[in-house]
Length: 196
Image 1: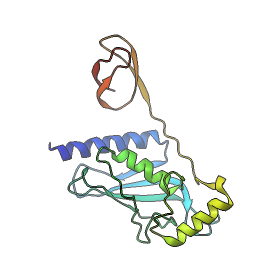
Image 2 (image 1 turned 90 degrees about the vertical axis):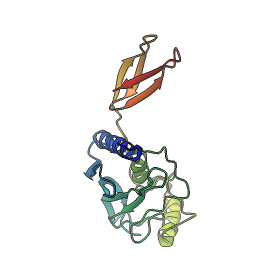
Image 3 (image 1 turned 180 degrees about the vertical axis):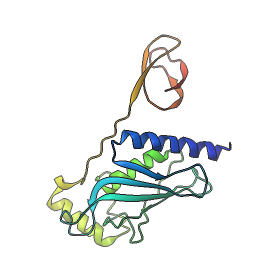
């Protein structure tokens, strides 16, 4: 397997773990290890259908992630396929993700960020550089009028944890389930290879 294939497989594994931890708020509709095929998800978060929110709200949001050939060195293209009214979503559904992309950011973190963006988490909305000017004006007016209305939905993630002993000192290490890699023991400083 190439490095790109390994990364995609690891990302898909983390997306499946996120789906499990989401308590039904995230559903992976299409995801396989074949490059060029989009990843499709259904996110259950409350967001604005149009400027009449909260009267017109959307609860199910369809998300499509297209990975470029040079992923993770190039940012994924994210499209919200459900019509939503958002400052950072173009009329065609393309999400304006800003200038910054970190190759170390996994797809699970990207999806969490997209859920927070869709639910108008103020830390993830950028009305200063809008993809939809009308939505940006609406959002700024709404936040000024009723700041407690945002985010429109609060999503909590249950990350299952497991306890593994450090082989060097015996300290109990609390680690996320379903992961594999190297962990540095905080007590003795040993690097430990673990699979949870």
